[in-house]
Structure formats: structure tokens, C-alpha cells
Image (cartoon, rainbow, N blue to C red):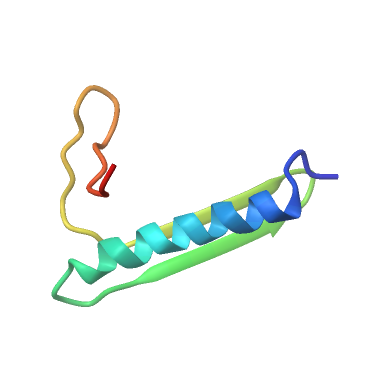
Length: 67
């Protein structure tokens, strides 16, 4: 009963993991990626990773990816 298709969910998770891997590759010391997926009344996805410090402009973090 999700409001998102399986294909869209896979794309979302792959993008989250790709971003986490890219951020970790820039870190010289210990790198960590934690991924949690919980399904109850709602779906909860969480991806946490080590990264270099980021600059927040307004309320967003500018992307470092090519347009």
C-alpha cells in the first residue's frame, strides 16, 4: 500500500546511496554509510554518511553534481 511504485522506490534508494558514496569518497579518514528501511504504517528511509562540511545557502545545500 505505498503511494510510490517499486521502480520509483528503487530509483530513490539508489540515488540516496549514490549521493552517500560520492560524499564519502571525498573524506580522507574513516568513512561510514548507514542505511535504514522501516516499514510499518508508513515507509521510513534513512541514509546517513560521513561527509566534508557543507555550506547552507538560504535553506538549501547547493549540489556539487554537474547540471
